[in-house]
Structure formats: C-alpha cells, structure tokens
Length: 129
Image (tube, rainbow, N blue to C red; front, side, top):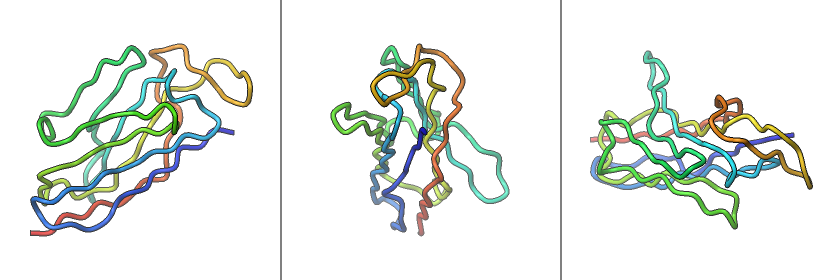
C-alpha cells in the first residue's frame, strides 16, 4: 500500500519560512515524478511545483524565487522549502506522486511521466499579516 504523509505546516507571519515534508511509504520516490499543490478556501487546487523523474523542476510564477522543491532519497522524502511567505500563500498543501508501474522488494517504482495517482492528506499553511 502506498502512502504519502505530509508534515511541517503551521502558522507563520508574513515574511517567515516553513519547510514541508512528504514522506513516502511503499513507493520509491527517487523513481517518480512528484509535485506540490495547494488549495485555498473557495479556490481550485493549483500546482505549486513539480520535480519530474528526470530531475526537471518547475515552479508556479507566484512562488518562483521563494519556494524550493527538493528530495532526500535516503529518507524517501520530498520537501518544499517556503521562504518570504505571503498571506496569499495560505492554503492546504498537498504532495502528489506519479502512479507506480511495478512492484519490487516492498516498493512500487515509477516508470516516468505517468499521472499523479497518489496524494497526501494535506497540511495547512496559514500566513498572517
């Protein structure tokens, strides 16, 4: 069974920083494309950042220069470091991973470029002025 478990959310004042974590269970994150999304009340879910399986990284224009996506393969964990936070960054943040293609040694592995089929439960980020 695959699980993505986010942590690191919280409340911070504008200008502050937070670092979100997304731990993978049953899925070898190093083989998978992954992303961070967010959803604010009344808004649709929006893409914040992606890290493709080939290492290509992209960011939404609204977070470029402030957010950094990274991965620790040894910990099987994806991160989103958020600096210079703004009130408009307030949202529930979700990590997502590509659907696994095959199973080996207790993990699903990805083949690259599949749709995001696994989602975490979300972690709340609240930025106050």
